[in-house]
Image 1 (tube, rainbow, N blue to C red):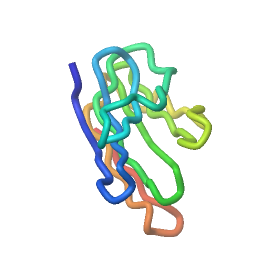
Image 2: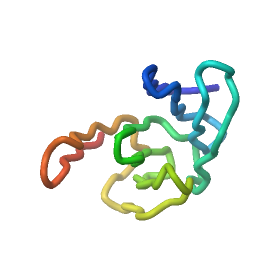
Image 3: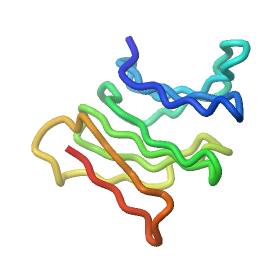
Length: 104
């Protein structure tokens, strides 16, 4: 079961957040999964993406926020312990310097 989908139709790519504790990167035109972001230990509720800079941010029921490099599908940073329960929503402004992020 998926929770969120963030498409970029110009680049033919989408990223989904899912109940299976992952976020997945898809080619829209053929429906193929081209990468999986693995690291959360509970369902991933939301994802925000900066397709231009190949960055993603995910939040999860495991009370953590993870930062991802989409060219290597690796986690580059983790924030945890600030929330007392699952994190349902994350929003980011990548066009700010420095970028701004909020979560609930």
